[in-house]
Length: 376
Image (cartoon, rainbow, N blue to C red; front, top):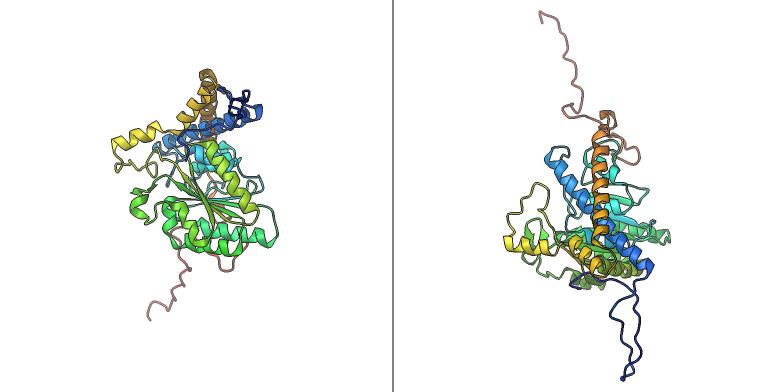
């Protein structure tokens, strides 16, 4: 894995040396397309950072209910992965999915409104933080059950193969998910049937509060693909360029009809959820995590390589902060969904005997008590 963010740039060559080999110029030549892509990566990473910080604040203000899991520290991984997909490809992810929704093209206002449980949210307020769904953007759900998305994503890949489509499925999961049966069953089926799917392990080194090496007999999680003769790779998840390049290779293989397992090693800047104080991590560990913050290190690389200056970084930060603030205002002004719509999206098609009971309502209306008269 790379130890610092890398730029994919062209280089000038000096005249040949005595050995007959040319040497690259000290200063890389950054093509306009490269500059646009790299600065675009940073803009997306900064938007996710400020959005998630605003979401954490709203949660402490009781504006967001239920559970709330943030992508803080995983911005480079999210941006690199999503940048490798076509609009027609499908995404399945877990409950830590706000950044994925935004980079998939869902407006931050709709994502924040969903966190607030409002009707203008991407799932009309009924999904909340863990259950984003947008068929138009082909984001087919965040899933609260650990690994619940993996069999469904595998089924979607089977449907693509059955229709001879050229789309692929990208399915993300946490490191702890690799220990459940559905993970192995799905990889086995995908390898047997050559399904067009990329399984991505977002390894932030902690399954909730348990480190990978204490939970997995094989802590190098990408190696698990070898049991199914499936191609795999591991990449530095703090480097958006490295993630993008690795994801491109994985997606290309899936599009050719071969599944792929990609392990993206990243960090988690906060606890498992907003309410988790992460007391299980030492001060020394947190200092190292903070030092490796992907947003800050990527910004430093862009400045060092002459792609952005401090004034431009500040402008991008201000724009991202404004977008997050506007998203929060939009969410707070959005109405709550009407109770009458509670069961509208339980099933895609009508189901016989589907119960529409509200909390406290009996399963059946009680039978009337017979009136036998006063003297009987």
